[in-house]
Length: 374
Image 1 (cartoon, rainbow, N blue to C red):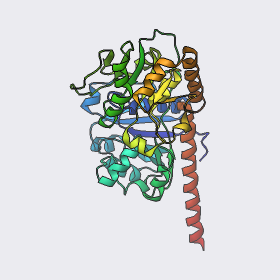
Image 2 (cartoon, rainbow, N blue to C red; image 1 turned 30 degrees about the vertical axis):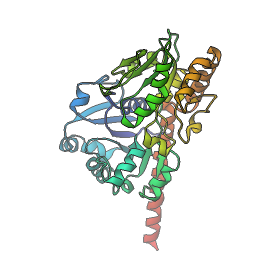
Image 3 (cartoon, rainbow, N blue to C red; image 1 turned 90 degrees about the vertical axis):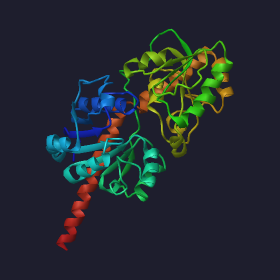
Image 4 (cartoon, rainbow, N blue to C red; image 1 turned 180 degrees about the horizontal axis):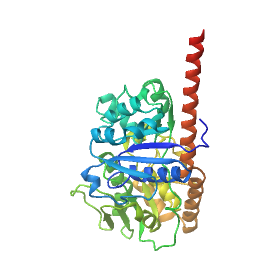
């Protein structure tokens, strides 16, 4: 299949209309936007759930087609023909009843099918425990492509142990039209944005809140929902319950540094960059992060990003780095992101994977036909 052609694409994802409590929406928005700008037709299908229905920050992004469905029966009856005739159909992680949806997709679609895992290490852990409602081990080989937010050795595991015909990285990305530097008052010395997660909380306590308590003159902020009421926040730490994507750029530009914290499963797997890293870098906001294997694939430690192993490290960065060095760090990270990690780069990669899969399918068909002629 020549990808100079316009493709009909169907995506089924957790949410594109609401970023409340999830990082999926921003990824889908930038990906769909760039696919449409490339000339492809995209239909995004989202399960209509009350949680997202009451917190929709972009009910209609203005690109592609977005449709809500109420049940699997509704999905099949209204969009069966779209799925059947599409050139490419992708099902994302955490789609409600996603395993059932996926089985229907691979049985129905004539085009290339893919599973897009935005939480790959979590998914593999759940598969082993039999608790991944959005995917089953038997379904993995049925998808033509397994797309993963996590790269590195885990991709070979997906192919060798789970039988995927083709596992490829499709990391998160950033839209440089939405994230860029701007002159703004620095309200905070260090800020963090992320939904509460129990296995990130100890790192937040050690790497950010402890320095906040010790640096009495410092100014800190934590943005994100679902934090328990019993957390004792330092007096110099502001709280923002929900920060919609439309306010992210101003948020990053209002701080001297931003903190990145990684979930335990992602640290164990490595090669799992957060979309927050790319967003902050695109704003040229200097980043402080915990360490995880593969970090240097995305940013050069010490030159484009700072790695903190303790509260003392964080405090040292905040108090000792000169303003000129701080700005250079942010600018280097911005250049790296614009060169390699925009949504446009991801569309290039996705198109190449679709083409690769069609090529593999053609080879298999030729092999079968040759065998029939012998």
